[in-house]
Image (cartoon, rainbow, N blue to C red; front, side, top):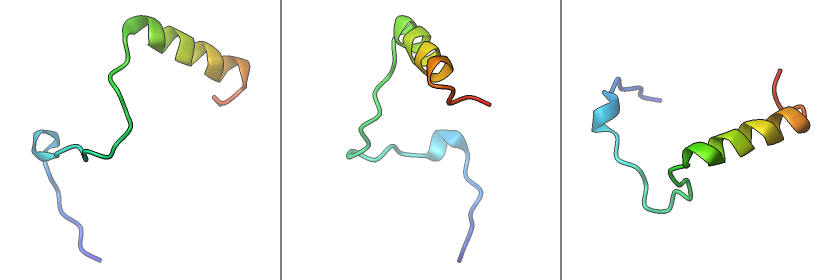
Length: 41
């Protein structure tokens, strides 16, 4: 296995990655659901 150190700016997101940019209110709902379902330690 080979490891390389890359700068964050050199990373290219994959086109098949389903992640989307979250709006500020989405972050609040996300944090609330993590708290409600005890997904945080």
